[in-house]
Amino acid sequence: MSSLTVPAVSPSPLEDAVKLHQAFKGFGCGKGQVISVLAHRNATQRALIQQEYKTTYSDDLMERLAAKLSCGLKKAVLLWMHDPAERDAEILREALSGFIDMKAVIEVICSRAPSQIQQLKQFYHSKFGDLEQDIECKASGASKELLQAYIRKTHYEGPEVDRMLAAKDADALFNAGEKESGTEAKPFIQIFSERSRAQLAATNLLYHNMYGISLKQAIKKGTSRKFQFALLTILRCAENPSKYFAKALYKTMKGFGTDEKTLTRIVVTRTENDMQLIKAEYQKKFKKTLVDAVYSDTSCHYRTFLLSLLDPDQ
Image 1 (cartoon, rainbow, N blue to C red):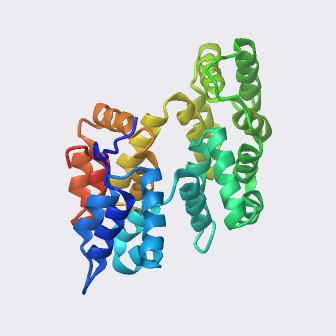
Image 2: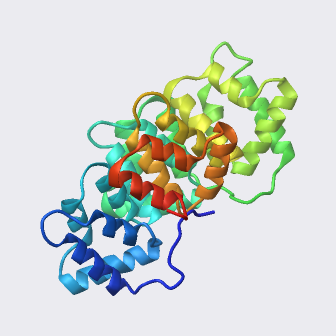
């Protein structure tokens, strides 16, 4: 359920291109004008605006936005302008370059459905090279093996569940974790990278019924650091991805300061996906609306842009 609102009768891409060009004129930039257009256009419309801007003004809209905007607003708008697969590929490339942000890599890969993974892999390959090879160079240990297996393998995305397989997997995970003095990573990597979300959720339920401890507790007890984060991300997104992202958003604004990079990434990537569900989960869990939280923790045009994506009334 998307939170994005677009006009009932959308202006033509040419009209939008003209408005943006006018906003760029003179000293500075009409940031409000830019936000009023781009924050209310879907991925298809944004692509058409870019094409029209190029045709009409012989100029690249992305380059113009990069030159005219700054700070958090610039990063958010530029990320928003991409279609979902291209955006995910761009996020992964940045996270795997320079200062490595493995948390972002794990979040993007482990929260996406197999079909989304295949699309982002194709775009990554066309623009940057081999994603699996880049992970090989930048990641390490069991988390590297899990990420590579997750992007390499395709699996069923439907709701049907094999209960016998779920029981078998629960037993295998128990034997590899709770039953041992240390966790054997291989069975976790195989099961978590090969099973559908519905199948993994069924295994999670049976694990608790069979052994009296949740699979999440077992993972926290028997694994650590990036491997633990990757396993928990996959499992939580199998159970309820909207709840996972609601908690992730809360963490970006918890305490002193705001993790703008993560906040931007989640809001931009989920707006056209399940943001309405995330907002409902956020209010249910934290007794405060996500819109109010973002308003309190951000400022200026960056705040206006995020709220325009989150709030239909903004």
